[in-house]
Each structure stands twice: as C-alpha cells, then as structure tokens.
Amino acid sequence: MTNHSETTGPSENGDITRHDRQGRDADDLAGTVFDGLRDGHQVTLRTPAELADALPYLLGYRPEDSIVLVALHDRDGRSRFGGRARLGIPVNEDDWPSAARQLVHGLVTGSERRGAKPEQMVAFLCQEPGAGESGGQVVERLRPLAQMLRLECGSLDVPVVEALCISDGRFRSYCCVNEVCCPPEGTPMGLPGTSVLAAAATYAGIQVRGTLRELRARLLPWETSAALDQEAALDTASMALVPRILDDTGRSEVAGETLRLAGRLMARLAEAPPASGSLMADLRDDELVRHDEAATLILGLQDRTTRDRAAEWMEGDQAGPALRLWRALARRCVGPYGEHAAAPLTLAGWVAWSTGDELEAREALAMALGADPDYLFARLLHQACNEGLDPESIRRCLRGERESRAHMEPDGPAGRADVEGPAEHRAADQPTAGAGPARRRRLRSGRVVAAGAGPGGAARGGTRPDGMRPGATRADGSRPSGAEKRAVRHRGAGEGGVHTERRGDEGER
Image 1 (spheres, rainbow, N blue to C red):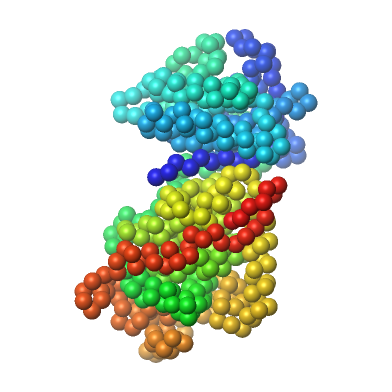
Image 2 (cartoon, rainbow, N blue to C red):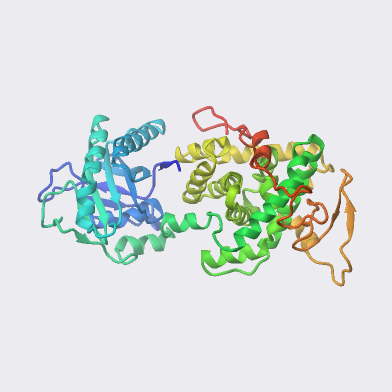
C-alpha cells in the first residue's frame, strides 16, 4: 500500500521564543509559547519534555510509527508554528533517504506556496520497540534517519533546532548533549492530559484523539463472519446493477434509486439514539444498514456522476449522517470488493474535510488511494487537503451544480428530490402500520421488484430483481466475474469529477 504523507497548513496555536540554555547555542530551541487559545491565553514550553508533550496537540492525535516535521517561522523576534507534515517510518531502511527527502521538500515547498519559507524545523520520530527491543535501541536504530532529516533540511537552509525520538514512554533528543536535561536513558513522558498545556488545550476546546490506527479501524472492511454475507450481497447486487448501469437508460434509473436509498438511510441514521464511544456508534450504524442496502449503494456509487451527486451532502444537518453512512459503506467493501471502497472512502474524506476535520479527511483519502491508487477524485482531494486549500471553493461548485440541476429538472427522476437530504426521506423509510404482503411496482425499465422487502428480498427503492438472494448465481451456476464487478468503475469512476478553483493556483478536482 502506498504510504501517503500528510501535511497541514500554518497553525495559530503557538509561538516560540528562544532563550539561552546550558548545553545549547543561543539559536537553539528552548521555549515554546502556545497562543491562539481562549481569551488569548498562552502557555510557555521551556523544556524538551514539554515540547514532546505538545506533539499530540499540534497534530490532533497521538502519532505511531511516524516521522513528524513542524515548521517554524520568525515574526518580530519570535517564532510561530507553521505547517506540519507526517509520514510513516518505512520498514525498509533503504527507503529512508527518499522518505526524508519527500517529507522535507514537501513541507518546505508547501510553506513557500503559502507565502513563507520556514526559518527552522523541529523533528519527531515516534516508534514503539519491537519484540526484544528497548526504547534506547529504537533511538539508536533511528538515529541515521534523524540525521537524514537534518541533512535534507540543511540542504534547503532550514536548520533542525530540535529532533526528538519518542519511544516506550520516554523521549530522547538527538540535538542536546546536556545529560542534565536530556539523559541518555531518556526522560519519562508525563501522563497524557496532566500537563499545563493539556489543561489549557482542554479549556480551549482543542481535542486530541487516540491513534491513527484507531481512526483507520472505523474505515477498514469487516473481518467478522458477517463479511461472508456482505460479500454474497455484493455479488447479487453486481449481477442486478452492473448491466443496468452500463446501459444509458438504466444508468439514470440506478442513479436515482441509489440517491433515494442513501437519503433514506441517512434519515434512519440521523434518528438513531446516540451511542457512547466511536466503537459503539459504529456498531449501532452497522446494525441499521442491511447487507442488501449496503451492496446496492456501494455498486451505485461506483458511477462517477452518482458519486458527485452524493458529495453534495457535505454541510449542515446532512453532513453528519452522510459521514456515518460513508464510513459504514467503507466497512462493507469486503473480500474482492476492496477496490470499491475508494468511492465511500473518498466521500467520507470529502465530508470530513468540508466540516473541518482534516485529520479524518487525510486518513480516509489516503485509504481511498490505497484501495485504488488511480482514483483521481481521491488523489486531487488529498493533495488539496494536504496543501491547506479552502474546501469552500468545492462546496460552492457543488451548490451551483445542485441549483442548476434543480432549475433544469425540478420534477425529473434525477432532479431535486433525489439529493435533498435525509429529512425528505424519513416518511418513506417508516414501515406502514398493519401493512399486508409486500406491494409490487414496475420500474420504467419494465423490471418488477418488491417494494419494502426485508433481507433476502429487494432493497427499498427497488434495485434488485425478485428472487435474487445473497449468494445467488446465474442459471449456469457462475458468479459475477472480477471484470464485471469493475466494469462500472472503469466507465467513469476515475474521471476527475466536479471542476473547482484552488486558492492561488488553478486546478481541477
């Protein structure tokens, strides 16, 4: 899987002041002042321990197996935190030089595009010991990597003023030789959330999540016994939907059905009682989406135009249920359908970015590229998010598309009602009291389906022929081929998508 680096733009969270300190040159980093907190409150960090403690607050999460660079910019005799960049530590040491070069050059050139080259840099290496390894051995093993980072920064005239290795609950400095403040055995990290900075950040509403591994777990495909049932449902949906999507008339019908079903599921999620913790919340959402419904949406979203329409659920009351739905669909892309996760992962990344959660946005978009490295929509969004561009330009473009379509097709099958959001679909998703046998209706294509059928029947909205149950096969006993499963994606899923402007740089999403 491709290891995609992450960068973020300048932060308003901190100033740095430099003081002389025993064992250091006057130009070395010795104190950090966090500002931008509530009521202009500032917190001064005077030791490497406090700088190490600040790392999760700079990133918004606790990094694992990571190289992290933080740019510093001088302003009126003080230095301010600028962009940050993170990259996973390559397992193969032969890849370290290229990783160091990629991270350093990406952060420096990105800062220059935003208007200011960094004057200095702070580096962090975060990795837990392997089997039979100590924290001190991790520090020595990663020392060449730290030196490569310093040399790459130096080649661009951006000195590294501090480089810390955080491992096994301790930190050690690669720059400080003063054993009083930086002993060779390392200095224990404080308990999370107990520092002055942690208290100030909590007061200011700054949240630190767990690890990236925990965040990714919300987007990874199932590995439980239910994955087999979901794969069977995806096979069934492929046989029913792929031929229709490849037909111009059927493609329009499937788009409308997909968006209406998505709207009903968003309404269902929005009305669900709250759950404590991300794990319980995800389990609740999984129970609210049937296998056949998830399969129908996953296949329907492989069409680029349908995916772009779904991206319009990006703000306000629609964003939360949409993000939960896209996460749930990503978890359902099991077995040979792993590549299909590129669409829901990209939508999850887009909604997260649109609502201000750059951390989940970068992770979801990087995972989308891991599922399909050629997925252009994810690649361009990932680049734009990393470069600190403003998502409002994309939101404005999508709003314009929606308004234009509403004027052109106000009552059509692909018109306004398909993408208005969950509120408009709540009534349609409620079971009718005292309902008798499932009603049947005929699609414009002439295909007869059961409306409102439960698992094993047709999904609400009618996207599967009667009698097509999970695990069903063709008359000759065969199941859908891999080529057929990918046919819809090759038809258009990788074609850019909506056009938008980029701040200070012309581009296309």
